[in-house]
Each structure stands twice: as structure tokens, then as C-alpha cells.
Length: 313
Image (cartoon, rainbow, N blue to C red; front, side):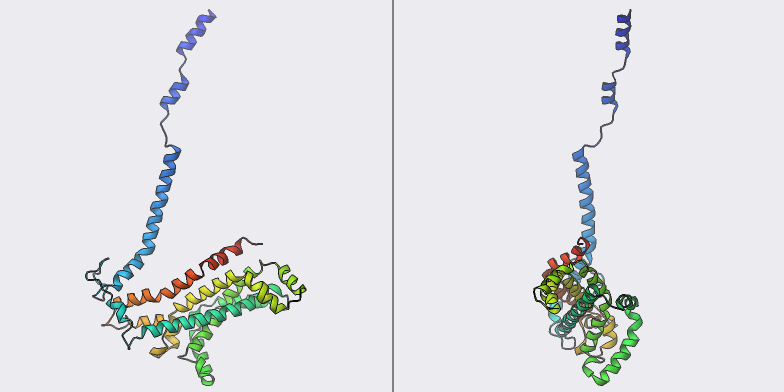
């Protein structure tokens, strides 16, 4: 009887393994899910690239547009020409090469002074302990909190007074503009360098001084080579900020031969009935070349300066 009951139970019992295999809905395989994820990422990346490059493509299209206008402009203008680029060189009323040289000169000199001054100040705050050190750091940070827009009147009056004694550093001079750029960037970049300098071990300089080097020699030959990435970062950021600035030159410079690139380019579109958008676009493309060259020349140092400080110490 027990054998009969066992056989009957076996016949009536459901085949759970077979039912489970046939009743479960087939899901996406691992390879299919990976392909789907990769496709979504590539799609988002493509949209981001298009979004970032579209303004550049439109500027290039406008620079070769013979109508010198952006009204009704297509992505590929009819009768594309390089006449707008040639117009940048042959117009004595708008000396574009001189404006570009003025911006490069002012930006390079300002960057040099900012790097030197910030390196010395940050080294002092990082390596020495003295009375007023913390108050000095907080004061530098506090001054940096005020936007430059609030200080334009004060800067104008300051340069006006300086120009009475030293005309080369007064109004309508590149020297005065360099003084403002160099002084205005000391705050935030001093803090940036100080944080990076703190990650460099003091023992390296102390060992150099034990071997007979002075404090200045250890700073120049031992310390500076190790902090070269952050120096490059500060130099490039200062160069870009001063090269593209428009507000201060607009207020402090008055003669055409003293104009910077941004202020000079404004002349192409400032008139009501003679807005030259094609020449303006061509000037924008040519004017961007120094920034691109500086960035690619110091690309390795920039990556090191922006990332090394977060993983050291």
C-alpha cells in the first residue's frame, strides 16, 4: 500500500523544475545590458559634444559669411569667403594686430607678476610662523570677497592720482592696467598656492640647508621645481582672465592704440548701422589662438597642478 501511495504521489506531484523554467520570463543577458548601457553613454556624450561645439561651429560659419551679418545665416553660408580674415589686417582704423599684441603683452606681464608675488606670499604663510599670520590670511580672503565691479570708481581715481606722478602707470596706460590685474589676483591665488605648498614636506628644504644652501637657494632650486604644476595653473588662469577682460579696459583705456583685444573687438559691433558680425567672428577665432597655444603648451603641468594637491599628504 505504501508503494502504491508513493507511486500515486509521484504521478500527481508537479514538475517544479520544468514549470519554473518554462514559466519564467526570459530577461536581458549580461552582454545585452552592457551594450545598452554603452549605447546610452555614447548617446549622452554625443549630445554633450554637439551642445559644446555648436557655438564654435556657428562662429566659424559666421566668419566666412560674405554678408557680414547673422540675420538669416545658415550653418553653411552661400559663397563662403576668407575676406573677413583679410579685413582684420588691412584696416588702419581698427588695428586688430596691435590690439591682440596689447592683450598678449598685458596678460603675460600680469601673469608673471602674479605668479612671483603669490609664490612668495604663499611660501611665507606656509613655511613661517609669526604674529599676524592668521590675520593676514583672513584679510587676503576678505578683500577677495568684494567683486571688482564695486571697486571701479576707486581704481579710476587711484590711477588718476598715480598718473600725476608716474604717467606710465596712470589712466589710459598699460602699466596701470597691469598694476590692477596683478594686485587684484593676489588673494585667491595666494590661498590656492598655500594649500598646495602645505603638501610639500619641509624636510626637503631643511636637508638642503643642512648641506649649506641658504633659505633663498633652497626655495629656488629645491622648492620651486616641486611646485611647478601649481605655478603653471596660476599663470594660465591669470593669463586667461586678463586676456578676456572687457570691463576694466573699457573704463581705464581711452585711445584706440591702447585698446586690448576684447575692447577692440567691441568696435566692430558697437555702431548702430555698421555692425560687422563677420569680421567680429573672424577676430574671435584668431584671438582665441593664444589661449589654445598656452593651454596645450602647459597641459601636462595643468593636470598635475589641479590633481596632485588632492592626493598628496
